[in-house]
Image (cartoon, rainbow, N blue to C red; front, side, top):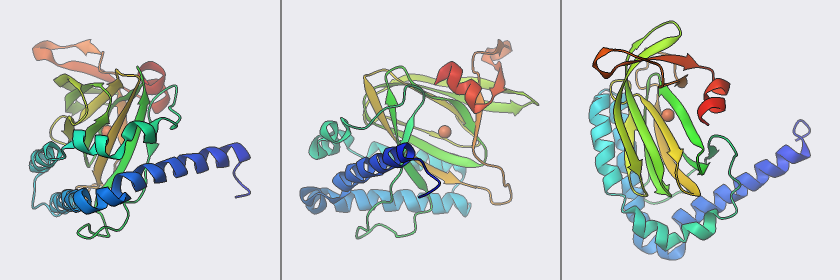
Length: 250
Ligand SMILES: [Fe+2]
């Protein structure tokens, strides 16, 4: 406690209270419990099984992407968001003026949901015209599901890494509304960039880290997709620091 300022403390506390109430409401409300919680628990446990399988190499990363997309399609999000009054829950969450604000909270114990999840999860909140800046991942499989609002989502295949650049190829450029989703792996659509196009936008994110345990490096690699245009639609894209990426795209 003594190492954090009052401001940091109150911001952090507010954030965790809001996050808690958000997920508490998403997963613990009585009516939600009775009717939908078992469905959500099953859905999450299937995501978990897939995450285990991709780590154990029972699934390739591309198979993981296909299976997670199938599960995302089953999320039936519109009903859930209406049911939990998502607007009211999120109206007081402060949004950043640049980039995303991430909220993470453990899922409560739910019958049917494994206690040890293999995947990480968080919610990204974005103000209009702010972005999860364009970045690729190393040794990570991840998925975005738009919970509320509209986003402009772009993906790129990462074909080659240079010293301070990547050779990339645009693979997806679409408007995403609530319930729409996309996935990333080392092998397909590795770079993604999501920009909020509505007053606010909320994205549920899951990620499986260290998919290949023999490779240690992980995390994000930021990139400027507006680089030198090469033949066959390829782009030589400069890699960026986090600050450069958020100054330009956040
Ligand atoms: Fe990402």
